[in-house]
Image 1 (cartoon, rainbow, N blue to C red):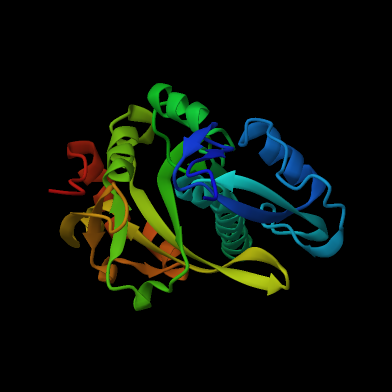
Image 2: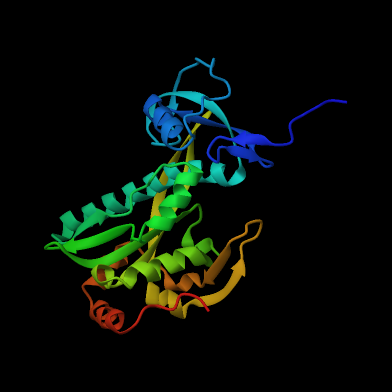
Length: 276
């Protein structure tokens, strides 16, 4: 009878996992070093003799450059996390670039600043980080060093109009409420959904952000549909009607409108109720 290991060592968990599979990534040299040292417990790839270099996309930084294919054993959760780094980078660059274009075009005196950076870390480091860190928004809008608004960013492959509902993990809702409870972040807060899709230069892939939509947390409160366990995952999620979301271009009009001033008053009185 053949003997085949039932469990493999997940490089990010650094423990044996039943769902660990051999996963590959096309990476440039700097991203390979970064992921190996920061996320994968400094574990060597499973096929270290692969010296074939090609011109293509790095799936982590999304740049067209010289890449190699690297293999590690990873569980389903860690595979999703490693792949999410490139998605988040594409989404953040998109929001920053779009804001900079609007800022220059309309001579706006508000600067968009990244607060919660993409942090590459092992599974255990992530657990410790979540225990010790206070929640923060992904971006803040600054005018004369004063925070005007917060942005929490989420990514997905779908256009908002094609989604049956918008989902937030309960843990994300708690983080948003958590940072809004602190004096420095007690300002109008918005959820941005950024559509990120894969673009190919076979056999390599990069992440490209196509568009973004936004909703006030108080509009999401009114758009609440239900709370449920995510399918195939052990995470409680909250579902909202997508009618709460508006195109990126309308965000600028909103923050200079009377409705924005009303939201500032609401924030002073109460925190949003994002789930029941």
